Image (tube, rainbow, N blue to C red; front, side):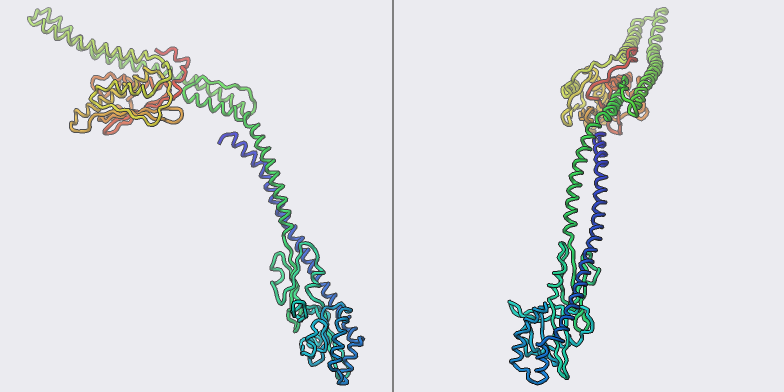
Length: 573
């Protein structure tokens, strides 16, 4: 991940994290306060319902008590019952005026019942007159307190009879041995709905028992006593979280808008701040890449201060120290290499001098003695001298070519044409030389003559090794050398030269690219040393891998060409 992306991510996190945290905290506080306020609303609504029902029950009790004690209708009914004169006419008369009495009392339900349970008259269900309703008498007889009492009563409605939960009160009027009960009340649901009118608070009257109080998070319940102290109905007060959801949605929208604004501001700030911060670091990274490719003359501008400025200054100091140390190391290596090569050269030159000297001394002695076959001896010994002199000349030429290897003169190369040319040069060899391209070779800059020499040396060595193995072990696979070209990443090209020879002896593998190291009879040991120098001068590297059958040389070259020569290169031979 680049510095710009990291900076943008950090700025986004710094901008959004507080918003997200504040939003989560606000949502939690809002929900907690809403739940607390909601609970208070339910408790208040339930308290109003309880107070209203108690007050309404007391008012009904007092009104019915006055009605029983003073109303002429009840007096006439009791007197008629006591005289045995309460007939159909009296029942109809009482039934006709009872609805007006109910309306005057503010009751929806009003009925008069004698002690044996017979309904004398009913304002809410006239058709019930003359029938038995023992529950109404029992209700009047059980009235012991003014606690609200609920009973299910059948009433006449437009669609037909229906049962209605009523907050009922009752009283009894006695005269001698005659007693009548008067029971009346109002519909419980209508009473409750008149009390609770607050928005967001719902009230419901449920017959019988319901969910225990406190189980529901948004629910409170009030059980109401009925006949025989059983729960006849329950008033349930519910609240909805519609307002909470609406406030949360508004808060979320506000937070989202704030997050978008903060995110855009953070990204803009990151875009503005990233270049000044990233430029010195990028320059240091590019300079490090150049040093890795061999360019030691790298100096960065030390314009900025602070930590980045100190980093640039330290990098420049490091490159200067590295350049000086590498220069000293190269000079020391060159001196050591030339001393070693001088010893090797002296040894190689001394070997042919011995047979030359012996041949000359033999000729001098033969001439002094006047041998008859001097001419034949002269021809034989001079041939030895000429052979050894030719060997010396080849040795000196190879050494001179190695010692005076020029710096590469890079140019744009056609890699396919270069490889094909090298393969064509070895067309007359017994070993079959083939070429394989893995993908498009791509561009390459380098010295054409030197890179051709590298390939020729490797392919020639491979052909010789493959042919020697074929001669030593007839009947085996035909000698072959395969040249492969492939990409070694975006900035490098790879050449692979593989033969099917007998491999390189273990004794020379570690020193394979050193001068005068060879395993082949008659070899000078400079071919691979020259190859190694050309490859390294181009900024690349070469490796060898040898097995029981076959040797593979791998050459990797940078596509941009060899690095610029340093000042110490001027003094090289």
